[in-house]
Structure formats: structure tokens, C-alpha cells
Length: 219
Ligand SMILES: [Mg+2]
Image (cartoon, rainbow, N blue to C red; front, side, top):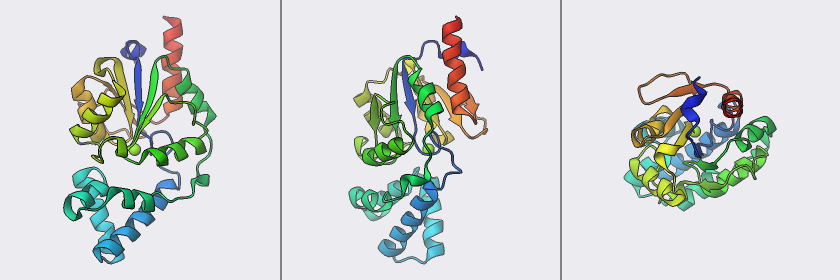
């Protein structure tokens, strides 16, 4: 991994779910159960219909919420309040990753398709509540989900992210298309899918970031 690729980076943007904690965690399974229940009740669907609808909205619109808002005019506040009621104790603190992020020089930002308050709870459970300079949730993006370009326009604008001096870390390859087009360095986490818009991938973010810091002190 060429360390020089990141020498210019001053703004470090991280996705939250499955980027700062692994996809093997039981956290997302709880969200899925809640989403399924919401869809069954609000759209009068069976469990299996709700499941396939959730998968379709995620595939077509980036998040279940984006599909619900588009097709059913769902209130995002009500949806997020209900769906994000989960037990954070399944997450273990990750001091090594927190230290690797803290050691990066520049600003560190979280940008998630969850709400800002949900992100704060997750970061607290990971022991990273003081690791980031700013947290941007979907409520900061006018409820437009990544990978829509407008979500990045809004959040990067608010955060004053300098595209050509920034890097973004994500587990969903779709969410790196716009960052790549804007000139950010892109890193796919926990997923080895290759695509022209992905500069690097890693299944061990702590080691990846550690090598960058090591590189900066050596050069
Ligand atoms: Mg994610």
C-alpha cells in the first residue's frame, strides 16, 4: 500500500456501520429485525415480503429509508427513532482502532446513513466518543442517503471537506463512487471487491491506518 498516496490527506472521512466495527457484529442484525417489523406493520407485508422489500430498497436506493421516503412518504424521524432502538452492548470497545484514527494528522469525520444520535451511541460503545472532530448523520444530509450525490454535497459542504485533500473509508463500494469522482482517496473496508473507483481495500483498518502514520514519521 503506497503510503505516499495519503501524504496530502488532511480530512479523513469514515463511514460508521461495518467500517468502524465488523460486519460480523450482531448490531446490524438487530437493525434488520427492526426494519422488517416496521415494513410489515406500515406496508402490511408478510415477513418474507418485508425482507425482500428491504433488500430491494437497499439495492435500488442505498438504504431502506430512502426507498420508504420515495415510495411511501415515510417520516424519517419516526422510522429512525424506532429502527435504531437497539442494544449497543453487543459492540466491544476497540481502543486499537481508536488510537490509530487519533494518530492521523488532520480532521477526522464520521459520515453515516444512520442518525447522528445513533452514531454517537455506536461510537461510545466502541470507546471512540472523543476520537472524531465531527459526526454527520443522515439528519445532517436532509435525509438523503449515500450513495446519492446530494448527500455528499450537503455533508461535505457543511464539514468543509476539501475533496483533493481528503480520504474516505467505507464498506459499501457504491458509497465510494461519488467520493472518487470528487477527487478523494477511496478505501474499501472489509470487502475485497475491486472497481475502478476504489484506490485501496483492507480487511484490517487498524493495521492499514497504522501503516500510514508509520509512513509519515519515516518520510
Ligand atoms: Mg457501512
